[in-house]
Length: 116
Length: 114
Image (cartoon, rainbow over all chains, first blue to last red; front, side):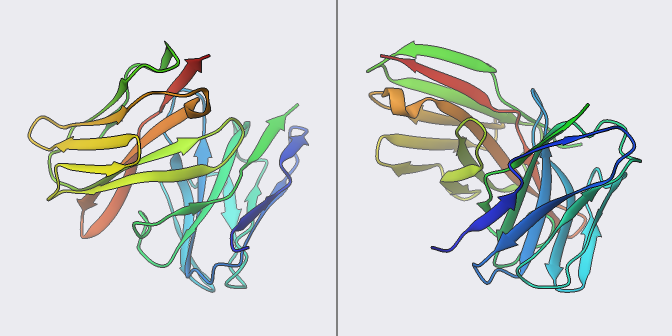
């Protein structure tokens, strides 16, 4: 079945550590996105990539980094510079589109990061 | 700055009732609007997409309406079932500076009591 796989589902981090969240898709989508979801707030765009080896900052990119070496993969690194990293992180993909994606956005199941 | 607001943040109703979820936005120059469903600890599933030229879309027991002039969309759920319990998110696509931006509401958590 085609879809997006995010791992790990739950992750605990000590302050000062970098962690990497995995996102893999087998939908042959060109564009991939990382969103952050916090209670009581709408999803916020962290980074997006419209093509391999290219990515753009979203609204809250500070303290995060990404890479897009393969079409299928778009890992997100939460660095120690991110002051408040505890959140639910969602990866999405679409056939095209800029920062908003095409009309059909497919989401992964999410990764919950908790900083101890 | 475009904003998307969903009120109430949470709603609990008995099974079988018809209900309406609300989404309001600050800019009438929208491109389209989508309603999503999110189950606890899960990703999002798209329910309905309304283009700016449309007034409503229907899928099964769900009906979404769009009133650009008043900056409002509603999601109507008929004959609610416990399986409808989830968080419902509204996302509005705006055209800003030659790019489309997707602005999300915070969601309404819906609980259908058996």
